[in-house]
Length: 213
Image (cartoon, rainbow, N blue to C red; front, side):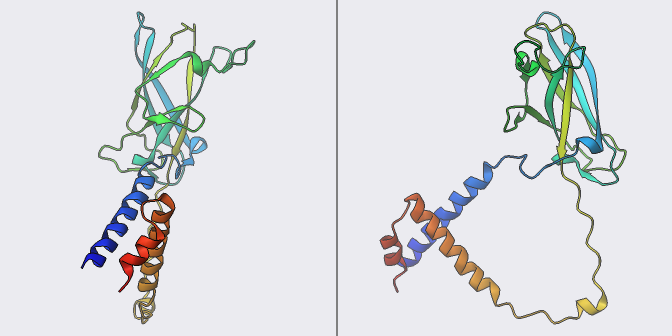
């Protein structure tokens, strides 16, 4: 009984450890650049002259023939340009983006650019030529740059096409004997235990004692 409980504890601990690593994965890892297949509309909604804060609504139009998963859409503030279309200081080469405070962003890319998620609402898919609900974005112009324009990139995922229906012949095909799951389960268990040993949660001797008949 103790051996069985010990095994369960080790497996549970390994599972929690693996799950925690998955939880903290970047939300942008699985997204593709859809900037060339979409159009971003930036609408100035308000301005506070005292704090030099600007409020924008930013929405995305799907220009591609594909359906986009709305909840996967992220808009990245890629750069801020001046009246001449330049995004860097002429003398220092510093990005104008560093001279602004970006408020209430959902996160940052690996190169430090803020991104915002487009909320799906009641529309799970963005069909061709459809327009998303807007994301609300606040930009504080702390250096009081006279004229500036925010420029966005779009990341997201296409909706996979539906699988073709099986033909009658394929549905009557005898399925092979299910011999792989036990082997797969054993391999998964061994992987989890090796992870526990590597992390120092349990030693190899403790595991051997716990599984000894």
